[in-house]
Image (spheres, rainbow, N blue to C red):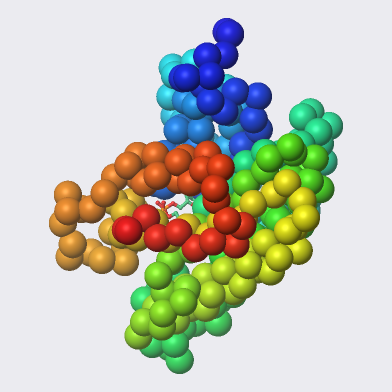
Length: 241
Ligand code: NDP
């Protein structure tokens, strides 16, 4: 299929999305695929990844499915090596996968729950970045996008476990932005704000989901940020604004 720069502005670009089996990650991977990027879709749920694959194919795009638990840190390293062998670079990293944990007083969090939050939301993203950094450095114009939350910078009672991991993630992203200032990589932290997903429904069970923007709507905004030539590395973008 010949690429049309109007419809396929990301043709030839390699994009990796974690948490691509549902929610914001799914919608972002789908939008990237429709825009012509070769999508590498990472998550544990194979059914969700296969559904995504079908949708990307239907839009004329192409995806590579990677069923992986991102706390399989060696698996992340192996994925980096495979990407290097196959494409030699990564143009777009969307570090989206995350867990909410339990909304509870910080002193009531079970140690197991605390550890899962740190493992998935923080350590896995550091290991992911560590594995992808050499690939991003091979891109002519790379973007590294990290999905955070308003609670990453503003404390909220009972959200401490999740919030602490997002605060750490934001500091990692800002540090990486400084360390890659002289490279072709631009880093951006995105707060999607309340979005109609499974995670949001768990956090706010009483809320009417119809009042929230869809993951597809948020994905279009993320796509615009990725394509913004004036994007400042290290920026925090709130999709509510
Ligand atoms: P969902 O719960 O709907 O989806 C989370 C995704 O992360 C799934 O695809 C899931 O895939 C993946 N994931 C979770 N754990 C792992 C793991 N161990 N290994 C691999 N993949 C994993 O979340 P949202 O789409 O709502 O959230 C996406 C991001 O946006 C998150 O970082 C979240 O913190 C952030 N956010 C969301 C908001 C909202 O209102 N929805 C508001 C603010 C921030 P699988 O289970 O198949 O592995």
